[in-house]
Every structure is written in C-alpha cells, then in structure tokens.
Image (cartoon, rainbow, N blue to C red; front, side, top):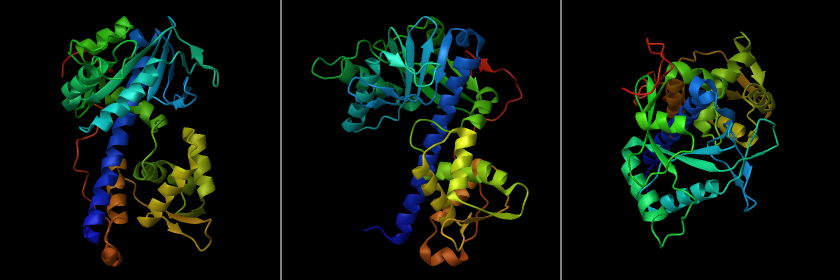
Length: 343
C-alpha cells in the first residue's frame, strides 16, 4: 500500500499532467480556430467554425468533437485530439468516437440551436508526433482496413501529427498510404506541406476563449479563476469577500463557461492550496491581493501547496521554481502569422 508521501506525490504529478494535456488541447483548438477564421485563404471558404460542438447523433446521444467546421460548399469537418494509449481499449474507444463522427450529417451552424445539414463530414484525428506511426497502424491497419474489425467508416479518417516548439505548433498529415484525404483541397495542401501555427496569432484567441469541450481539470480552472476572475472581483482592493455564485457568474459572463460543478471543485482546490480562504459563512470566500505571475507557475505552486503532506502543512511555503516542461509558445520576433513549411 502506497505511503502518504507517495499518494500525495502521485496526485501532484497527475494534477500537472492533466493540466498540461488540457492546456495543450486548448492551444491546438485555438490554432485551428485561427486557421479557419483568420487565415485569408482558408477562412474565405468557411461558413462556420464551432469550438464547442454538441451534435445529436442518430443513436440519440450527443457527439462532442473538439471542433467542427462547415464550409461554403456544404461539406463539413470535425476535429478530435487524441492521446492514443497502448492498450486495445484505448484504440477501440477512439475508433468508436471517429465512427460516430463519420456518420454525422448535421453540424452546428451560425444560428445557435439550428444545426446545418452537410453533404459529408471529413474526420480529422490529431495525434502527437511520436504516436503517428502507431496511430496509423492501429487505427487504419488493425481496425479500419481489417475485415474482421467492426470499424468501417465511409472513408478513412485523416490522421495529422502535431508537435510543439518554443514559439509554434506544427501540424502535418501522416504519410501512411492508408491515411484518409480531406475534401477541402486548400486545407489538404496546408497539412501536406506542414502547417506551422505561431503563438503570435492564436494566443489572442486563447486569451478570449481558454476552454474547450472536454471536462476541465480542477487545477486548470482554478488557475484561470486565480489569474483572470479574482483580480477583477478585487477591483484594486487589497482584500474582499466573494462567493461561488459571483465567481460562477463572472466565468459565464466572460467566457460563457457554465459548468458549475467544475467551478466548485476548482474553488475547493484553491482553498486547499490556501490561495483563498473560506470565511465564517460557508457561502463566503475571502480573497486577498497577491502576485499572479505566469499561469503555468501559478498552477505548479497551487498543485504543490494542495498536495503537501498533511504532517508538513504547517511549515509549507509557496515554491518559486518554474514549471519543468516544454516552454510555451510565445510571441516571436518574426510577425509571420502562419508558415506552411519549414521549422
């Protein structure tokens, strides 16, 4: 049985892992939103982009890909970001998702609540670069093209690899001959050559829309509340009282974020990490002005404080070291918004 120290250490690493995966997914959705809504060649062909698609499937369940697009020619595309694991259940789960998307014939349109009919849907599956070969073998070879496997979409999904560098994300269509092709010729061309999305372009989208369809990890949401919501509530004061209701309303107003149960978990984490304090009244929260710094650093400090061993809580101090992971994309000196090739 793991010791208390091992349990808290494991929780700490899982918090940061979940934060990083979600944060990376937000970056990727923002990069594609920028491509489909701001890049002149591609955006001129787009009727509607949706980063929170929820589509009723023929099985009467909601399909929730990471983003969807309707093009001017009446065709559509859905995107799914995947971290395919080695066990077969992970592959089958992903194939089930992709299979459901393949049969969609309606996607969210520009009029809220009024899905638009599309003639066909291309399925874009985004996987980390180090998994592209395995994804091709297991999704296309072992599943899609295996006569004994149930996964038989109308056309193979298009698998695209992504990687992250200091100032950009790079996306390129997998070279596997079994890989699917996109109906949209310009988009296919971009992804065949390598599409580099620099942070100077999509970072503005992320500031406005830091959430995606997936459930939000408590550490990520808590950090957004700490960095973006509480300073506005403080409004220059050194301390103030607030409530779950006020924070929930602020998230809804600023980001259209409506998952109250997740908000409660994030606030509980902020209390546990001693970033905020519960007041005498259960409904009130005491907030004090403090240094915010970078969001990634705040996330690590919060995780370390929240996961400190109970017997050490009385002497725990907030660490100042930075995250030990890949540097986030920052504004490069070169103002080029999108590069189609090159590193």
